[in-house]
Image (cartoon, rainbow, N blue to C red; front, side, top):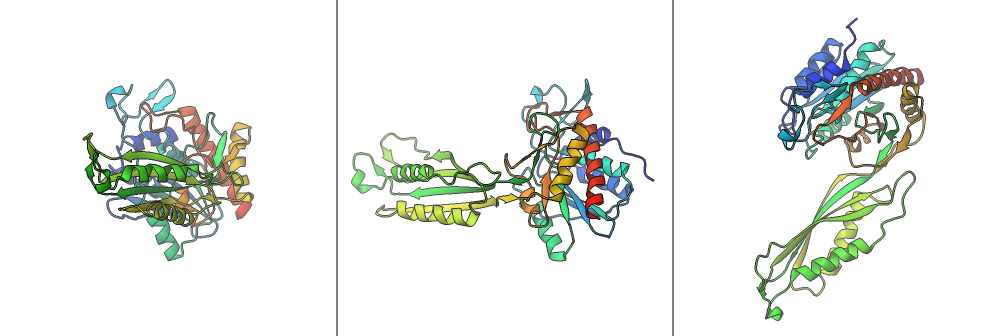
Length: 380
């Protein structure tokens, strides 16, 4: 039997690979070598410049999958860090480094948990991407599509995102809101401000359109979800002159939506409002929508109970079952199988001096050990 893995040391090994999206920097190699030593059959799935890995040990059902990402966000001002962000030192019991929270420590904890657990009556797999922090087009999305096309059976999935809110084990994520970005460009006719009848000013059209969009109450919430919201994120004209009516005005907005809506239904609404705003205007309005994920909810049941119970076994307290926060790769995995997210406290993710107490990394390993035991007792 392979010796039990130290999750902190393995997290350090991963962090020391500066895998800032889309670079891999050898992080996937480090993971693959360790998984192969544990008896996993590893398959690299590269799309574009993105390294992905699907690994499985066992051939029987059920197949419990652990999903995560080795890519990290840029460090920002490296001089502002108290430590080199890719040296991964432990200072006073705290691991400091980019990816310590989001989410190389969780990957290390699950690998360590597998190394410490007896072989189950079933299979364990890993779905790891290098494209979660980026545009997410050549990562988990493509791997999931390939696994579905091949008929690879994955029964349930755990994503190791840092879901704990303020205290370790206080929250798991059982769903997420969807997200749609939209760029709206109003193209008018440039002219002199003293002769507006010769021009078509795009700015009032855009401002009125945005006001109408924001005035709509999308909904009052959904089971276990907060209300959907639309936020204007930028308005750009780029007109340096004081006496020129500009030709173009452009805005971007984002809608975070619950299961009352779909990306398609919201796109249809935006298109209708743009068409109405353009009536009688001597120009045109162009809408460019991009749905980055649909809303989903993993229904209450044995799988969610297993995940919540694993945290409660270690912390002594049941976690909140939440749908809050932004998007994650769970939005793609949900088309493959039921999915839950559970991991470290996320307060320092993406920050200067991103960090995780080593005691919590060890505790997360124990949570994943309990998860494995509970899962195969319930589903085998």
